[in-house]
Length: 113
Image (cartoon, rainbow, N blue to C red; front, side, top):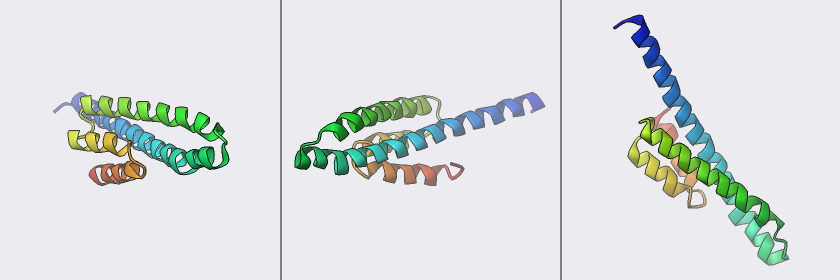
């Protein structure tokens, strides 16, 4: 194998690791946003009649969720993550605390994160 091939392989590994890190941090941020939305903003909206938290956190969570979905599909297409793990990330993003279980599975599968 030539030195050029090895450099290309290293660059590819860095790119895959970069995709995994993006997915990991997006899942973590989306999980936090969902928890804040479900356990803080929604109760405040209905118990205290203050909808501002939902008006702010709803779009934040939505943007993070769509970013996570796009990053997950991109990482999957580039074979940076396994299909089962991608499914776990997307399903986990729909459930409070689910993103953190998916993050843990991602960290276990790729300890370099």
